[in-house]
Length: 214
Image (cartoon, rainbow, N blue to C red; front, side, top):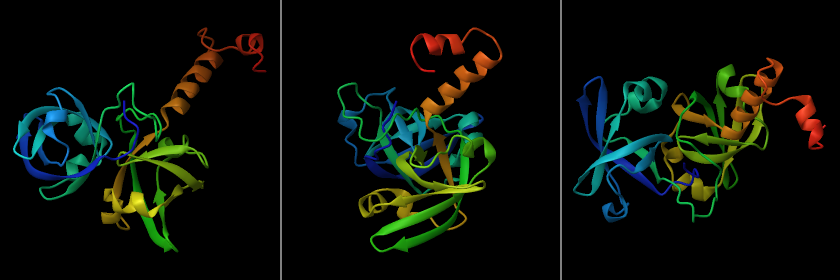
């Protein structure tokens, strides 16, 4: 589990094939003394595992499923990526609960500077947009952000200068694809409600009424 608060911008130093997947060697300022082999690391919002230490960084393996569902397939040597280590139970939850399991991709449709802030618009498919709500949370390339506004075809976020300069958002431009993870709470609520409507004994009107939710 992650918070969506980026710790470092890493650089891909080497990419090799690993069966039907890939291995990335990442250069990072995160001290390897603070990482254990097997630790979860979010790379552009994708939960991966540190498998080996190298000078100035570490390696991660990327499964075929992750390559298919995320932007990591398009990443090349020299590309920079957002990095975050897994949340510790004692940490402050400064962003929101992020699982590192990407739901799909969105495309940047515009990047506009508005005084000290940067407004970024995204186009996305319905399977992404159905979980997007105004002022709700969304994870973009591993970054916890607040939805500024949404429409039938997309949504936008307003980026503060610190987030823009300390993440890979300052490298993104119109037409780029980004990884999207929707708010996990919304997905669980949907699952429970759909289950109740299908009569499988999940959440019922009677149960909600019992606890004064209706």
